[in-house]
Length: 165
Image 1 (cartoon, rainbow, N blue to C red):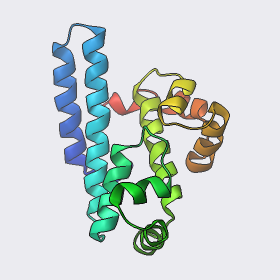
Image 2 (cartoon, rainbow, N blue to C red; image 1 turned 60 degrees about the vertical axis):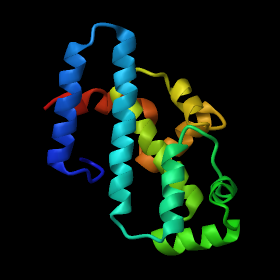
Image 3 (cartoon, rainbow, N blue to C red; image 1 turned 90 degrees about the vertical axis):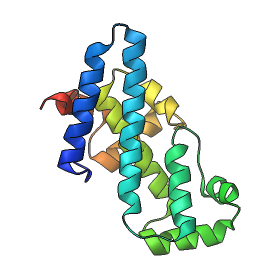
């Protein structure tokens, strides 16, 4: 809800996952459900992003970015995947979204990392590696720039807070 997901949709998803979690008996099944939950949340946020009307190229670029957050991504990677010119993609992305594509990618990775800090016990190093930051210190630097605090401060403040209804 903090990032614009409708209150009713957020609570419905939360209830569904809590009910499903109650039926699970192994830690592996719970971790799988947690991964599904994070992906579902990312998809919901992707759909929210699409509510702003963008050209087909930018919509495809945003889709590609969300589906590949766990990879090292550059403007060239996205342009190549969409079979369009790198400069054209950069210009169009900036024009339609108001931000450069590399910043958009980093911002989305940090938002996804913030959710992992809230709802998982993965270490900062594991999260940094998962989202392909060049180092844990660079991840911490980017996180601080985007969120206004370090990953440790963020986890201390928000860990599991989203699970309380």
